[in-house]
Length: 334
Image (cartoon, rainbow, N blue to C red; front, side, top):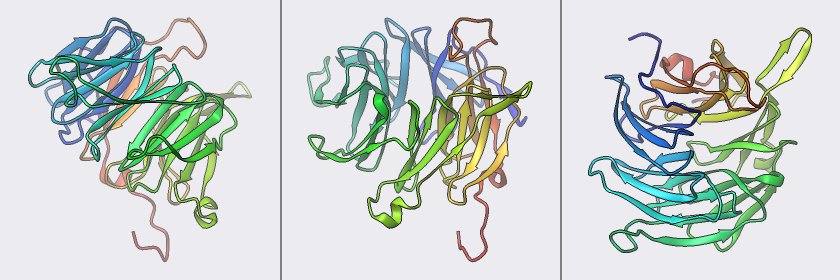
């Protein structure tokens, strides 16, 4: 197989999310501003199914089996079962549904909206046609990004707020933090080992943080500059739109509006590899569950307003085990 190839039949407008199935490395789901959520078989390189919202879709994720969840500018939280074709609206927010994640530990969906609330949803809890909202939790600002790992929920908001919750008790906030990054948070992703999370900002930086509030753990947090280009002697600084942790090695990839994708070793604070630039902004990244393929959405993110830009494309890059491994440090056993 080629080191990289382009996915056939990508969306017709900006790509908001690419996400691999949690246990099927050949299955990729893609949401777009063209109002669609599409399913692909990346081995056959073909689109296998598609469903639509009434407006741009801003995020999607897998639940159990072949169940998909999605939300966007139509404010609806939708569940679609690709194996049966069943399609239901679980409920709505009062503004756009910006971000979502499925909690496998609790078997429910968590959504974050521009209406300054977090919602939890379980399609099994309500009537056969209507699903159920388990709870709505008010936050101080618009939600930009969230992620879950085990029982923890990390929520990044406007105003540089980062709140951490225990999903079993959403009425209380475990920790209220201010982002380590000086500018607006663009994305947050939990580490695979459950010890912390990485966040990125519109100003070319990534922060690595830890849940444990002890001074020893907090002393380990750090931030670094990335996705910056020197153009004619001027440093151009780009938003970091996407982060994705490798499912086996715990290293992570970042993608930015400079068209760059970089692999990082967060344990040892090292850059592992920088890949050739993509045609336009990298809007989303996802690892296959076996860690062998990185999906890259090359899709202009309108940071510089309306302008001519490369077409929206999805690239599948084969990543060797060696490329994704952390650097070994003398005296440390990995």
